[in-house]
Image (cartoon, rainbow, N blue to C red):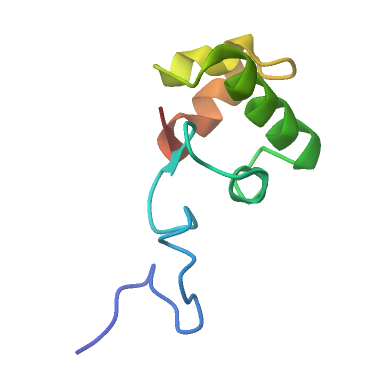
Length: 84
């Protein structure tokens, strides 16, 4: 019953909360969920949540380009980590 390399004992509910278990939903993630992603810190996480509040959510990952501080390079780095 060998485990998968991605599952580590002690992860608890991290995957369910948007941890390394799969992509994080831009439409429901908390600032803490977003901050945990590679390439996003607390300031950018707060901007994403604020953009979501002001615009009613994300219909596409590409809308991250409308968030101040996210350019094409960062979008591509985040694309595999998030879903609308």
